[in-house]
Amino acid sequence: MTRGAFDGAVAVSSGLPDPQVVNLLKASSRLVLAKIWKAGQAGEELNAEEERYYRVMLEHEEYHDLWDSLEYVYDKDIMIDGVSPFLHITIHAVIEEQVAKGQPPEVVETLERLQRAGLDRHEAIHRIGRVFGRCLWSTLQAQKPFDATRYVSELRELRP
Image (cartoon, rainbow, N blue to C red):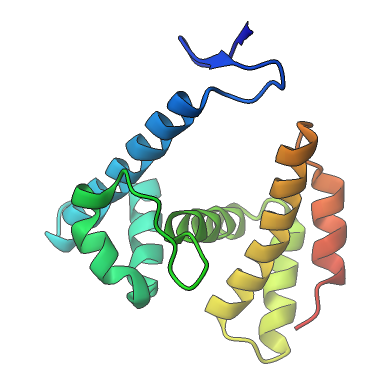
């Protein structure tokens, strides 16, 4: 066994993090989402990243009940209609960040192209997110760096 990137994180020979570390990170990130949701609902000031996540959480009304109870179920494996709401909004927020920063520029170009073709912005973000998710999954499976060239290529090929 080897030490992982996180202090105390022990990885098995496959290079994957210890499941206990993964569960700790998962619970921590979900508690952060619970804090963002609660603060946003109370009208408290949020930083730019928190605001982006809060807006994405608001856009997904199908998850509002979950967000309301997140501090009580943060450690549970939750799937809604076969989708992890946490992964869903995280990928959605990542795409929103890419659009806001214009990086890679092909994300903005793809968003505009999909909207010109008749998709609303939310659905277009989801389509881009599916491409990102596939590329991310391949990266994790292969245990290699994210393939930005593949991502851009798939974005260019994406049709409504």
